[in-house]
Amino acid sequence: MTITTNNFDPHEDGEDDVNTNLNGADPQDQPEADETPAWARKWAAAPEGPADPDHRPVEPGFDGFDQEAPGADELGDRGDTGGFSGYFDPNQGSRPLHAVPGPPSAAQFDPQRWVGPQAQPQPGQQQPAYSAMQSNEPPTVAYRPAPPLAPAPDNGPPHTLFSDGAGDLKQPPSSGMRRLIFNLSGGSVNPGPSKADLRRAGLVQRVNVSPGVCGYKVVVITVKGGAGKTTSVATLLTALGLHVDASGVLGIDANPATGTLADRLDQPSRYDIRHLLANKELFSHGPDGQIDARDNVSYPTFTTYTGKSSGNFEAVQGSDNLAAAHMLTAQEYDALLDVAEKIFPIIVTDCGTEMHHDVTKAALARADRVVIVTGTARGTVKKARQALKFLNNYPADLLTEKPLQDPNTGRDIAEYRHLVSRAVVLVNNTGQKGTFKPKQLHEDFAAEIEQLRKNDDRPAEMQAPNTSKVLDLPYDDHLGLDGPIVHDLLQKSTQWAMLELAATIGDDFEASAHRHYNAAQAKRHATLVGARR
Image: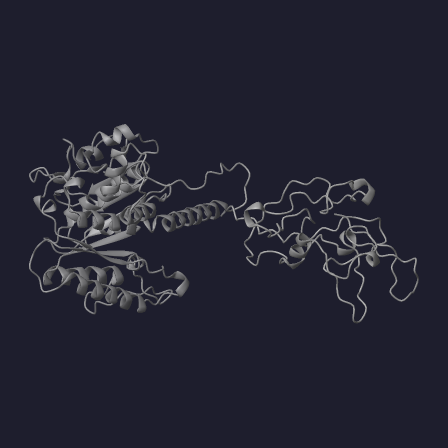
């Protein structure tokens, strides 16, 4: 359809001015009745477009929409529609399609370019249904502009280089009924991980952090027997061995006399700590009984003297022969630890009940974290509090029990006070009837540690952040057998408690790596300064 107009000026009178209507006839020859075609009236009365902003009309193919339309004589005899074939939607009756060819977008739409200025009607003159338009350019086809298109849907984050574009895959379940459905369907039905699977993955992720090249050392202590210390050590070793992403976990039975850690192993070794310390490939022995670790040590040689467990850990056994028992010394323990940390990234030491023994103090001096085991009985709880005070005050005056002070700085010496902030109090429920409930012990030990931290006289920058925890180890019949620990035979609550304990230990792995690095740098700097002098 083409709408043309001459240079019509409403302020000039003349018989030569002719305004051609839609059919190309003189308006004076037409009757006064409105004979505008029905399709034109319906088209003019139709709304400009759907009110729904999300409407996305389908535009018909149209090439060269911005080219000028042919003149009136070029259109030929194509009916009263002026060549607008296919202008109506057959499914919606006379409702016009608004996806007619038009400007590409509202931002690029130029009314002067497409339609041109419209002539303003005179006062008293009715606006025609199909207004005449004039332009300085050659006559063109006036198109009704299409409504703006809906925004394109968001297809996620933008594509980055070398990305597969597949996104995060739905992980399969690891346990429970979901895993059974996944296995029975051959993997075609993937219900996804459950809440328990997600919790387990979060705890394992806390453990799978590199502890550094110097090894991470955990010391387990208690002041009174019967609290289940060795059982707690075997439980911790099993939890770390099964969930930590490291090359090995080692347990050391550092009881000065005899130890019972070998009873918790599936494959105990026929050798004990005496035979290991006598090996000349791992240790050098001086004429005065001095023992030192060699620089080059091998894993096969060391593990010849260790027992094995199904919990994926190894252990250096203590002597179980009282007649030939070897009293371990602090120097021997240091040499053993020097060799072990070159092979095993995580080392757990089971100390005796004597806190003032040289081996216990040597273990605490090199410990990254300390675990204090207590039961629910009144006696074991009292001894656990004494162990916390020992870490905070040692060395202390024999009479006043107050920490000794450095004469140069005037501050407490407190060799092990930094371990209070990294202490883990493990409440081991051995089934004994006690006067304390685990929840009450949680609150009391947390308050005790906080009070000890407030009394710290060191500057704030020298105090370690508080990462202490109070955890539970529920009663389990399998643990009460005093035999090798099989993880699958433990109760679910015990398995969760073991994993929580391992995750708590793993929370300090990254900070420990930084501490060891800074200590090595300080030692290297001191060596260089001494050499220059």
